[in-house]
Length: 427
Image (cartoon, rainbow, N blue to C red):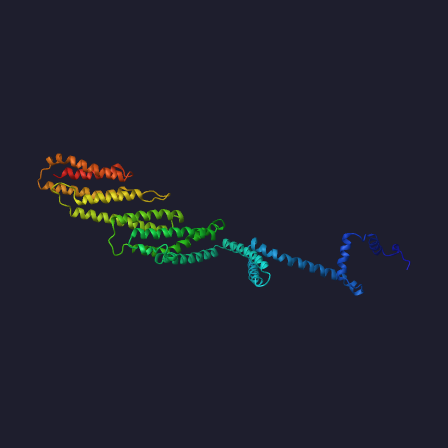
């Protein structure tokens, strides 16, 4: 057996030479030999023949373990970055399954681990649902409708409770307690509504973050809100329409009610937006109260012109003039003290004064013409009564000016002219 390396075949001699020249103390070689020792136990011919296939099987097993280890990362990536496909829903289902299984850990001694896993899975679920609703507007619409319906029912129950039962322990008192006072009744209802709307707006802003909603989302949610608020429109109209049921509407109450409704129209418009169903309902109620006010003025004016008062012997102003002045002063006082929101402005006051004074002026003209037709001379009386007329007019104008610094001088002069005209024409 004295064969040397040079006598062997060229290929075999080259391999043997490489083995003889290799260093056995290198870290790479030592690690490989240690790994080989872990599964190559017996140095048998069968083991040597299967060594290559055994190494390949172990490499395949290691690759499979690596893929299995990266599966969790792939699931998380599917929830966060991949498109909404089958992998996304599989990952979401797996996360839900893990979240449900964590409840079992809470019943054992591993509660801390269970809570941490539940919190982590909840974060993944929330991000997945957010992506799902953001990229699928139809799903967002369904979610928004469901939220709107639930909040509508909850708000309706709270309103009925505040209306009939009041707060805990009876404080604050039920709103129905003040049903006999239309101004207090409407003011309390609108005040409660404004407070509830502010809370609901904050809740919606938290649930439906505007920064994460696409352009189509808010429009669809706005339409859903319109549909939901339309359910309450008829209810609100019905409640407020019954305030004056069974009683004659008062002139002053109608004007104050119109002012209160206008204030809350601007206030709620700043909160929800002008083109919403609730704001449109409030504006319609405000217009109805205002029309009622002018209808009452029109009816009183027509009655005054149809049945003008008789001229007093001492030429004193008839009760219609005195009553009209007192009503005007009270309305002016309410106009000056009315609440005006930052985004609104006081309504024009000219139509109100014209509606009150025009019938009085026409009544004065009719009374003067009727008195002239009787042939009574009035030239001597005109000079004799000019001083009294001036005193009466001056005191009345001073009263108006002291109660209203915002009413224009032309409107005040119209009232002064009506009294002067009446005292000037009558004998």
